[in-house]
Amino acid sequence: MIHAANLLVTSIPSPSVSYVDLGPLRIHFYALCIIAGIIVATLLTNYRLTKRGAEPWVVIDIALLAVPLALIGARAFHVLTHPGFYFGPDKNPWAVLFIWEGGIAIFGALIGGAVGAYLGCKWTGIRFWSFADALAPGLLLAQAMGRFGNWFNQELFGLPTDLPWGLEIDADNPAFPAGLAPDTLFHPTFLYEVIWNGLGVLVLLWVGRTVWAQWGKLFGLYLIWYGAGRIVWESIRIDPSEIILGLRTNVWAAIFAVLVGVAIIVVQSRRHFGDEPTPYQPGREWVAPSALQSQSTEDFVDLSAPPTPEAHADSATSAVTSKQ
Image (tube, rainbow, N blue to C red; front, side):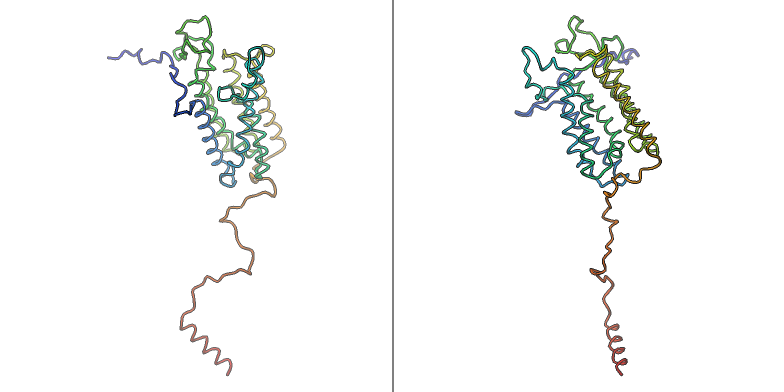
């Protein structure tokens, strides 16, 4: 008989590989997690925006600007908050461009992505806040999926722990803290964030069904939810980070995200009431093809059935009689 204690989780193993080589091409699982998250977020955002009356797949036009700027912002934020990785003696400043070696920050992605989304909305005629509200649940889901990339890379874990769900890290991993026993377990901060974000997706989808969750307020709630979680997870992470007034830079960024979320909700609640009339900017509305009707009578085509021979005979008789 299997002892009950053997069924308990004793630790969480880390994957032994983080990439696969296909000929000369090396594919990192971290990149696949991010790409999968972007795809899922796009699909969910398209569904939510289309339900509001937007043109199907207009989200693709917005993503063409938002995604590249999000990646640029993510890399720039990481470099600015980890300057010692790239600048100084024996450092290669050109490494700031080597994004395939890792190093992106979600808060930078939010800033760059917001700029790209704003420009994309101007281009397509979609209201920026309508797009942001439609994006919020999918964005949080994408962030949850992306955290599995940290698991594959054995990175961004937390303090040592003796909890039964402690994370195993290879002792020869460059991120393994010096001086600790090889069998030391660590807080699986990636898993904490996956669970927190997953719950947040359910909350946002539920709140998003109400009238309140419009005019950008659902996106504000997203910032509060995500920022509150990151404050906790960042506080127990042990990877190198710049410290400002005793707090890691990402803790400050998370606090700022919460404050921005609160500000959006307060300001938008005072400026707007009731339903958004349309997800489009005034004068930029899209009309579904099935709703289009011709307003011209010059190109009218009679689609009635052709006259029968009997109708032709009756018409001829009537014409003769009228002449008599």
